[in-house]
Length: 286
Image 1 (tube, rainbow, N blue to C red):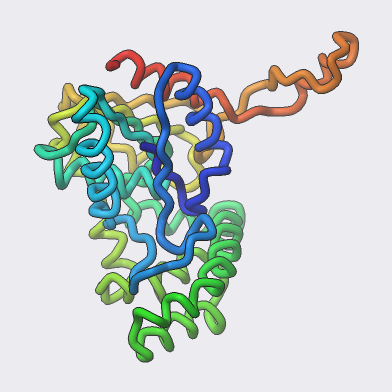
Image 2: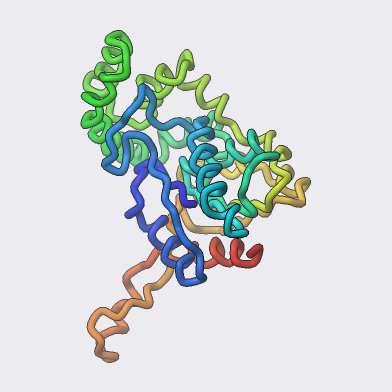
């Protein structure tokens, strides 16, 4: 099962590349959409949250009992960024009951409270503004659906956050996600979402975490290297470069079909590299 990042859609390269490689290796793929994303109307009073691990548990248990258990097949989990955070909390909180035989988490925020201050300032807050602007518009589309399941008082808070506050992603966390899930502010939300210090809870199935030292959304100190070393069930795969979920390699695409011209394809990057180690890890377990 694949769990995407903040956009929630299955068309993102970091999801399509892994799904395509997994299918080539003989895996069947299922994609989990977040509430209010992927053009799916929200049907409750909640959207996404780093701690919404039960949103992963329910479909996981259903798929395993309905298909894999009856057919004697294993099931694996791949998740990315926000989805990686949610899925890791799932593995930490439901370790004894998880049906997964292995998992890979890509670009997972290990310690949001530590990294958010850098996230807000690096490159002038480019990611904070860019992701926030995109998500703000998507959530606005969901307000009529959300209003069917939410009190007028909370809807007023959400509307104010979307229309009268900044377009930053951290502003959405402060004015929508935190109050939606019962946190007094975003700082309390970030502290609660901390993964560091809890990885020892993952004991049942092997798990790989693919990260990059130059991930613009994080800082090197946020990666709990010693904690990974002390857990034989975990593998921390770090690359020197790769940014946030976008390990770029030279493209092998053929643009024209003429050898004399197709060498030009090498100057166009392709972000498919990460799919190979991710699927190789799962295939090794299989």
